[in-house]
Image (cartoon, rainbow, N blue to C red):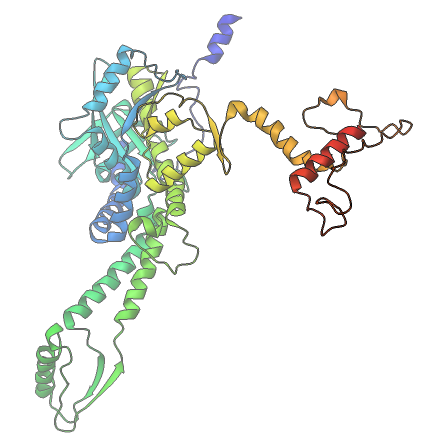
Length: 500
């Protein structure tokens, strides 16, 4: 029975997980030659995307921003177990070899550069390929493979059997499935390749390039208006000469403002004014469409539009950018690396790779949050000082509550609570509105009044000898002395105690 359970817990074999459906985009004759030939059209699209990256700033800027943000903190190896704070056990030998690979991935790149190229290829081409060099069955180096020259070789069901790189029709390389780490973005119909944000934005990128070329030509010609010129009865040679003179005298930045002069009855009329402002508005609209495909808020790219309703603050845009754009790309990369490098490459199951987080918040916001936590008792003073790099002090490990009346240790909160209740109920007690007396245990009080008990008579107060007719304290002489609040409060409290 135990053997059957053990077999059920084992991972399924490759034969057991084979599918029956067909993969999108694979030719009917699923031979390597046919697949390489069918990928020629895809290579043309990828080359167009590369040219768009080099010529359109609103393609390169979001891609570079995402790649830099994903890899800003570097990669770290984290244990899957919850270790006590400050405890760092020794790494197993396979984890030490993994750390060596992260420190030296190849002679030309470090790990951050390698993963930055991976993020760039994902956002531009939709796919990224890494070559894995092994020694004695373990990875010892990683290299970036050009996504525009890579072809995934598979059968008609999408089962990958290898990879082929064709550079220029003469140089090619063939890789086994375990020699390449293939990372791809989501595709609407599935398939072997992903669809990148740059490919989705190809139409507005093309329109942006045309309008930028129009602006460039307007600037080169000095932004002249469109004219209609009637040269009357000029001959063809005279018309050609007029065109040449107009080009020399009236076109170009230096000729801006030069008048158009005609003779012989020729008439000149302006068909439409200059439209540079309209061209700029069009390019801004196309810019917003392009960066929306990449999921980059305007503020992250240096576009500050204070009057843009609904754009949100800088902090909200930063949070949206990280949650919707950066974290999904980072998790996609980490999933592939954790499987191919840790589990398959080194056989590591107790550790995983993570991108280190960097606190991008404003320093004042961070300090305000620490101050609120310290005042509410969530932080102790020594923890606060540890975060800012200061040594601990005596008594700094006791949490305190700081309010308008001063600091109170959290260990004294029960006593403070009872004192506050006594203070709040003292006026009601003095007026006889409740049965609570500060300082008297609840068990000694009977909230039900005894109607049969005789009402105690107030004790006569000693009379002042001077309270006689004609003397200084005569009640008939002048106004009676005003009773102070302390005396009134004390008298009411005494009367309440007497009645109880």
